[in-house]
Image (cartoon, rainbow, N blue to C red; front, side, top):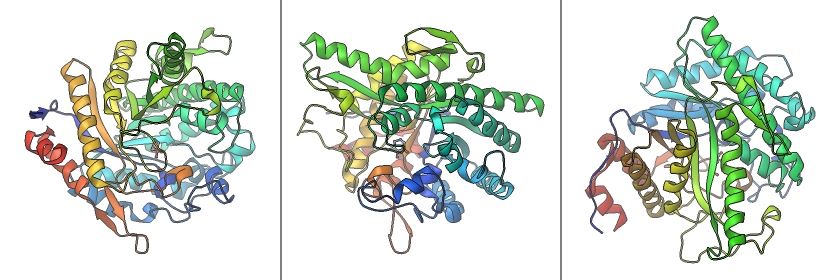
Length: 436
Ligand code: IFM
């Protein structure tokens, strides 16, 4: 195959994404409690230290600067900021202000997520996202954060991957609180949608009140490319379409149209969702092949394609061809600017990691060529970190970490990504070097 230079638009944003719990160490939340229960984390690890990013963020951000980052996406830890309901920890707020300022001081744009999977223990004890008051409770937290951060130039992400919280925590039982109940997963989906609306409303109101320019606000969605096992079988085709709708579209359509879909399939208007989405964050990793002869809701899927490389632990197939169609379906459906807020692979094989990134970027480039408004691309992740129920067994980092010293060691993929950022795209030479 002959490669061509793939130039991205001027002003395209490049960087990496991470989350507080996966990298900071020393948290006290529902996940830290859950990690202690033997068997919950595949390799038996926990986040007591993680990457010690809580203490090493300055060095991590300096390294990111050295490697050309223009955006750093990270989350702040609700359990640190509000350790008891309604009681705010000012020194943790000061800590995160320093985190944001450190990013800004390096000339990098901070993209800050309010909720990335973890909950304070008191919120868990109130029933977390099953509690009908959870949206307002989250809104109050968002208000406090907005009051404390509105003077800083931040791109705001409200909630990361609500459908993963609903599916992994309440349908498949792989994440806390380990429920396996379709009805509950639906309730969680709805409550997180309302919570996003309250959070966005608070962020807007506080910026207005303080006389600040309105920031960009986005929810971040996990998306997958659903494919029928047998494209000739209408039942498989219908199942793939149904899952695409409930996993990829129902929630974000609700946010964009300001309507909450209820369990009976009706919609009702929810004012706080109005004007809550400036752009959509999309996290894509793999496809999902489904068969009507299997019980998908019980976790049954056809055998994986032996010819496709896979992500360690999570076993996701590498399927860059699924990226373009899901991007296009978001663009066609919502006509909102898109931001590729996570993409990457958990593997020790850096050759595979480099090829993964390049092949996915070729798809993103094609989407832009076809007129889709994509504002940026972030690799998951910068320093390798705790991959939830996999523990440290699935290594997504462009930068490795020595287990004993926690020293950061940039991999060749980090240098490759630096080259991409410097050239604002994929040169012919780079593709020849890593894709031949
Ligand atoms: O590590 C996670 C991240 O927290 C959310 N998106 C998917 C990543 C890889 O599984």
